[in-house]
Length: 64
Image 1 (tube, helix red, strand yellow):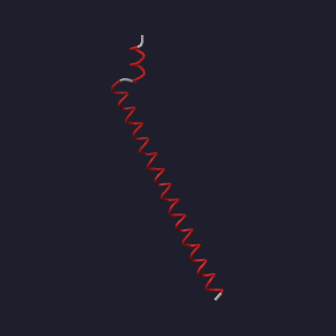
Image 2 (image 1 turned 45 degrees about the vertical axis):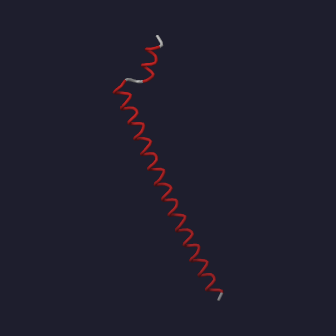
Image 3 (image 1 turned 120 degrees about the vertical axis):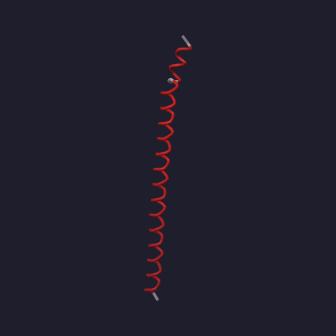
């Protein structure tokens, strides 16, 4: 019976390690997705500012 206990423990540890690796992969993918989304938001903001004029430039002109 001791060998069966060791095998069961080994299988459980393997499952735990696999789950940990899967969660790590998913977490990394979510971080990558977040970075891509934030870069898209920044790019859109920059494009809008370039088309409409920088908000700080408008404020500076209005305060003169």
